Image (cartoon, rainbow, N blue to C red; front, side, top):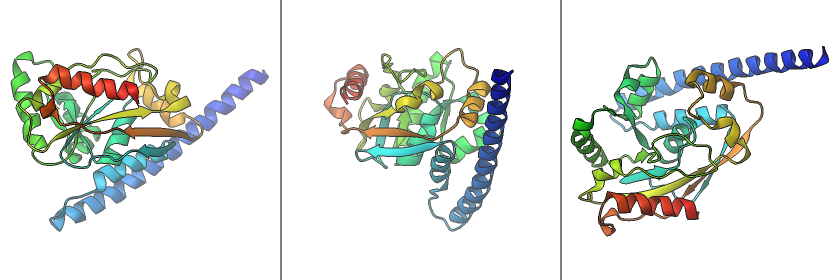
Length: 249
């Protein structure tokens, strides 16, 4: 009976914690949207989408530690992939935009927020459209905002790094003027087990677990030395170099 009571109490606390965090996120969103609109009305580049995403990470318990200097313009950021939390962190610290499958654009609220942050929506399963995807990415890079990619192609457990798929590196062949590649290692420390989003974990269940998670955690983003893609012969060599730097960090 005592074990059942303790479990019920923990469940109640988790529910209250999730509700409180959701309330904070909604309040932060309303403020960020109002400020974003004001910035846009004045013809200024709005920092509020990335500030909002960073704040969401903090509301969910993250104490963010940055090692190295993030490139905030003219960069392809290449990172290991553990969770959707990675998006909050890379957008919040480097102002990065992302590549997402086209279906994300249709999702309520999430698609809208992704659009505000400049997300590139592509048809991931369309092999015949790869050339169009590459052209879209090259055009976006010329706009200056950093673009983050996760070349593992799926989320992992933060304990090992999967092989890098070189497909998206094709956007850097031939090299885009002034664009550098910056590898980043995201380290969730002891919280990795709770935050990793693995293949058998439904999205809503994972989000619920993160919202209900007790305590805070430190996540460290290691922004490593960037390199010039022009120094490498092809997309496979670029992918290998980015992975090697992350492994060695």
